[in-house]
Image 1 (cartoon, rainbow, N blue to C red):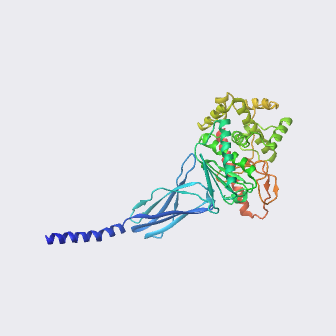
Image 2 (cartoon, helix red, strand yellow):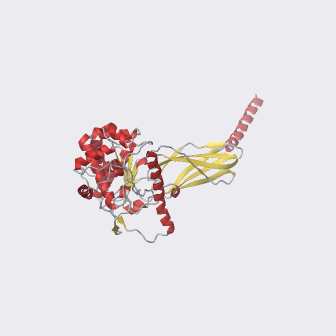
Image 3 (tube, one colour):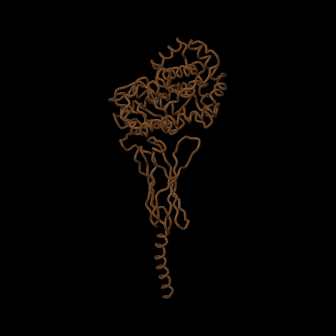
Length: 450
């Protein structure tokens, strides 16, 4: 009996010795994490161990957004072979475009050792945070608004404007948010630009439509401007939720027309747009509907006219045919219809037919000949593609003289801060890169349509 008890005790001691050794020899990932230097880069961190020397550490990551292809990217960390490795890999935003605050990145690590063993971490999420500011947050329904300047009533007023804009949009189009939308309110246009990689000097607000995120610079003394800006950009996000398709694009006149129509609680157009439209009607200088279906002109006068026409076109469709048909039109785009096919299906006419009806509606002369697509100089896009917001008044700023715009897109009509003349050749090259990229992309897209 004593011998049996002794054997049992010896067996227990052996087990105690074996268990720590087994755990020590496990091949596993001890720890992972992320740190951010917003907006310049984020770094993925790793600590792993193995009974054999670790030779490779790969981080795979992807951004959560609405896109036609969810691509998982890879980064390979530098590894000094060893049984315990601590390393990391940095994703530099200058190489791929900035992410907005609130964007979510999913990542996982794959680690290999010299024997061919492989261990993989669980997929984890990291939300981009602009930690240069102390954010406060309020939420209502599907909207979350974050801000760091001014007081609570200022934020509440912007939130109410956003809610009112959504109600107007539902009345005029039947559209409503399909998911959560995040609004980030910066204290000025300059502080907003500091949160972007390669910002344009005229940027006062951006809508990251694929992310359902809006960022706008609104000084505390510019609440009225900010309320219109919030309504405009929020409309872009909701429209993208409803119409996103990998097959076709919503014409610019429809996207900007809806956003401009939804800016004002009364549904009134900005006076500068009205003046430009009336002048063009009187001089028979209207742009063709098809011509403003792609990029807006870059010249200031034509850009303002493009906004005025877009507002008038959408106002005509909503007032004449009602919200139900507009909702059907937006649904047609989400199904992959082209602009002409969607209009034909819902209204019984294409863009040329719309041109005829709309010109009669505003008292303009009929277009002579078949309306064609004008070749317009494309607007300079930011990276990634988002739509800077603009009114006919300057983005509120505490300083900097203003000058007239030279850029188109969603910024047409905005008076710009004076350009610095101290930029060197490298800065000039960076500023030209988006133009060349935009020209190439738009050229390919146009050829595909043809």
